[in-house]
Amino acid sequence: MSDEKLSVSKIMKGTAIDHIPAGRGYLVQKILKIDPKARAVIIANVDSRQYGKKDLIKIEGKFLTPKEVNIISLIAPNATINKIENSEVVEKAEVKFPDVIEEVLKCPNLSCITNLENEPIVTKFIKVGNNSVQCYYCDSLLKYGEIVDNLKL
Ligand code: CTP
Ligand code: ZN
Image (cartoon, rainbow, N blue to C red; front, side):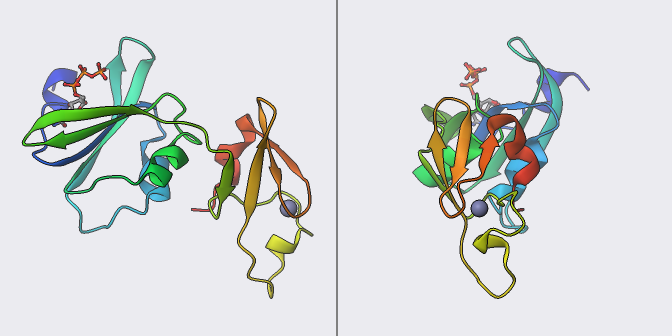
């Protein structure tokens, strides 16, 4: 099947997340905790003019919150979020890396309070500089390149 045909299954109302790095569509699906009953597809490894190959996700009947949109940037910094109504794209948004990231990341420091079994403390990372985030509790640093390996999925 041609890439054009594959991407053709248009949705009526919902969200199409475009320009996800190839192979990362399933991570975006997991981090958004898309309802297993939702009518959704991941289209993997289609040709992209900008990136060579890319993944795409389409979710019928779901619109993303601003928080969800920005969480996607951890995995897909160049993603485009297309809001679709009556089968038309009514809004296109870019993702923005958040200043504060709660819940979705694990702290790499095993003795951090967020990793202690009996302390159900939700993780919190703060963006520092241009390429790292820092644990609010123990100050451990995570470089952007390490984020994908430290997702709590
Ligand atoms: N889309 C969809 N269902 C619709 C309309 C659009 O699934 N009813 C999807 C398209 O398949 C595409 C994305 O939403 O993946 C964006 O659509 P569109 O803006 O028409 O495509 P492009 O112009 O290629 O987008 P861009 O310029 O952002 O690359
Ligand atoms: Zn920590």
